[in-house]
Image (cartoon, rainbow, N blue to C red; front, side, top):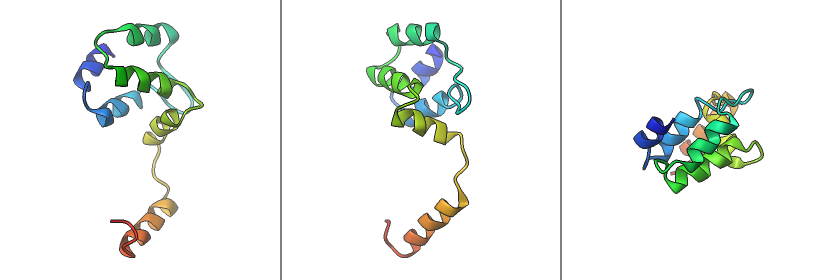
Length: 91
């Protein structure tokens, strides 16, 4: 993961997409020792450290965001969004 952190150092979206491979709704593939090593590493930016910590905490919005990256968009929600776009409510 250190290599991944280096590759995504200044790209939050890319970092989150990598995190989603290790954080799933039913399973987190990052154990405590790996988490500690990552948080202590000088290779990660402060943003990466904070977002990693929040992503691993199941009570945070960041965790939910990462989980949602793994799930398909519900067609009902997508259709509502498209309707608003057509009505020029969202630009």
